[in-house]
Image 1 (cartoon, rainbow, N blue to C red):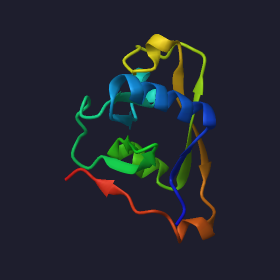
Image 2 (spheres, rainbow, N blue to C red):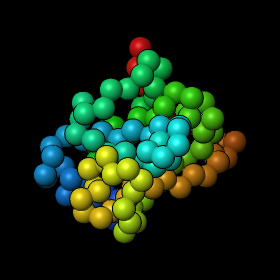
Image 3 (cartoon, rainbow, N blue to C red):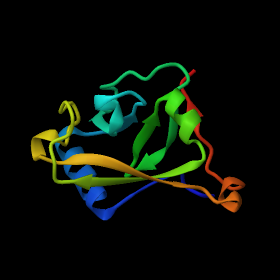
Image 4 (cartoon, rainbow, N blue to C red):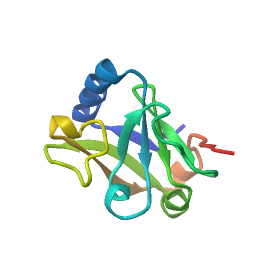
Amino acid sequence: MIKRIDATEKAIELIKILQEKHGDLMFYQAGGCCEGSQPQCFEKGGFYQRMGDVCIGTIEETEFWVDKDLFEYWKHAHFTLKVIDAFGVGGFSLETPLKKTFQIEYRIFTPEEELDLEPVKYIE
């Protein structure tokens, strides 16, 4: 099965650091402006998803949730989580005190990949 999300080594290293400090984590990618323009990392349960929001997969046992409207727009895209040295918009994400920011790069799935995608789960 084809994963819908992967992460760079730098992103995985940062996730492990944040897990050591905060325990179980979760990501949320909203579709709005400002905070919604980048993935946000929270302690697991530290953000309440909306009905219909979608978990597209896990990275280092950390669920990656996407706003239901954004998923509808990007459901044909693979996400790659990366991290850069920068202060993110607003600073609500757990990596902010480390002067890091998670970002997503997208690419469109091939027709062959579309036939073998990992299933997603929804908030009902």
